[in-house]
Amino acid sequence: MRKLTNKKVRWIIRQLDRGTPVKEIAAAMRVTPRRIYQLKKQYEETGQIPELKQPGRKPKQIDKEAEQIILQAYKKVQTESSSTGKADRKRLLHSHPSQHHIQSFTQTRSGGGEHEQEKAKEVGSL
Image (cartoon, rainbow, N blue to C red; front, side):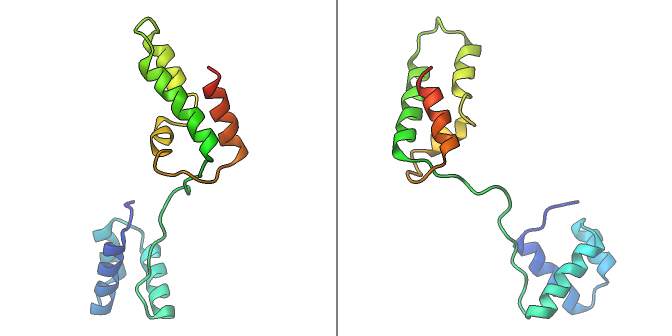
């Protein structure tokens, strides 16, 4: 199975309009015929080419206080002497859900849940 993109969905609809068999389209796109029929039904019901939703979990926002705690802890880890072992630095970096979150905090600076704030305080106290 392959992931479909909006571009591929448009191609599928064009092929259906040309009369290409569903099994042939499914084989070319490496999806099931059922998925082709689903797209076909959506197209017939709405008259518009179906748009796919963005996959994955929505990013959660954190408040400024939690962001500052996390950034301070991250800077502390970055500037620690080489006496701290690599495994210890890695553990400190990943005590928050992911290093990616820490880097993206500078870009998103609003909102946040209790869980993220608690994690941020844990990181800040290390």
